[in-house]
Every structure is written in structure tokens, then in C-alpha cells.
Length: 307
Image (cartoon, rainbow, N blue to C red):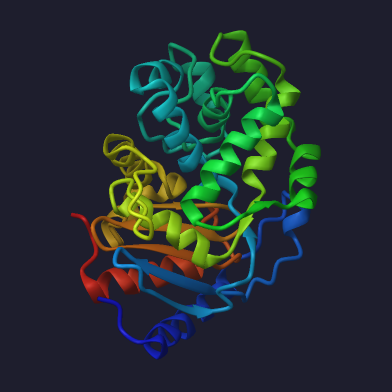
């Protein structure tokens, strides 16, 4: 299904020049120093083969990719009815950190779990009596998915917490309307740690492969996510995973995927493979610009679009 290492290296070199058209995320101070010319990819197939190119072991933070993982966790804990009473299922053309729809939409709940307001509402639902209990539950779940012991980047988490005033505003608005409960600062500490979970492309591709395999870990054969939850998560990846260009991405690439402003992209090709990409130069909406080109070339080469 995937060609040779040399072939994948060739695709990376074809995509790398596009990075010059983007820029690294600057609104999170700890991400400013990323090298915009970095580009790496790993593909992990459902028969436990992997192929990679670029600096595939370089670590980066998940950022918004983590939203898919927390959604899977709380859906298994509470079921769809409870989760979607707090957050909607509809795409939005607004920026991922917008407060506008919370003010104009009735009831005042986030439109979907992939925007910041929706992700905060989902993170608030992680089971645990304390923030530390919730964190341990989440990171243990992530470790099961990657098959590795990963943690979070403390500098990035602290940097995000210190610049999280817009997210604070979203939280207090939702608390006023009963969407979230509890201490807002405790939630933000957990959320910034979640976003700062750090891994490499190989780890990310393994997580993508779990979703591609309907929740079954290809390596161990264990069910980590139920089939229905995996389906819901992949659906959100298609409709909302690439911020407010998800429709264009669905047409051009057609692979369930979720991006983050660190430059990571997790892709899940149903029944075939997981994909992990790192390319920190972003386009105007926050997607890895060279990473998008890589996915477009891969999808064209292998006819991986689900449509």
C-alpha cells in the first residue's frame, strides 16, 4: 500500500518548499521558536508496518489534535446523549477560538467539539474528583493509544495558560449558561496540559491507526475505543477537523484528519492506516501548509479519499 522509504522522502521534499508560504504560530510564545522548514511524516498501517520520512522522531505538542482524543474518552464514559447535550455536532465557518456563536446560538452551547469552546466543554467532562485525577486518566488513555509513555511540555503548557484570556472568556460564558461546571482555572490548567501533550510523528500515526481500525489497536488487537465512538470521532475529523477549511480539505483530500497549531496533523484512512505529520509553518487558518500538500499528494497517489 505504501511505497518505499525513498518514495516518501521524495514526497516530503516536494512538499517542503510550500512551508515558505506559511508561518509558525506566534500567539503562543513557546511555539514561536519552531523551525518553519521542519517537515516529517509517518504512516502506520493496520498490519503493523510503518514508513517515515523527514525528522520523524522530533517531538511536538498535539494542540487541537488532542480534542479528538478527549472526545473519544468522554463519549465512552458518558455516551452520546449526555455529551451532545453540552456540545453540538455542527460545523462552523468561524475561527476555532470565536465566541460569536455562543452569544447568538440558542441554546448557548458550542457548535462542535473541535472548536475551543466545544473542546473546553468536553475536557470539563473528563471523569475525576480532581484535576490531577482527570489528567492521569487522559494521559493513560493516550499512552495506551501510542503504545509509548508520553507526557506534556511544561513550557508550552505554562505559556498557553498565561495567554489564555480568550479561553477564560469562553469558559465563563459557558459557566454562566450551565454548559460547564467547576473552577475555571482548574479547567484551563487541565486543558493547557492536554494541548501540550508531546509526541513524535510515529506516535501520532499510531493514534491515527486506532481510529482507522475502528478503535482496535493494530499492534495488540485490544479494543481501545468502541466502534461507534471511533465512527463519531472520524466524522468530526471530516466535518470540523481542519478548522474552517474542512470543506475544501474534504474535497481535495477526503481523509479524516485533525490538525493543531503546532503544525501536527493526525490522519486516519479507514481500514488502511494512520498518518502523523509535523510541519509547523501554518496557513492563515492554522493548518500545516506543507502538511496539507503532503496529504493531498498521498490521497491522490493512493485514492485514499473516503468520498
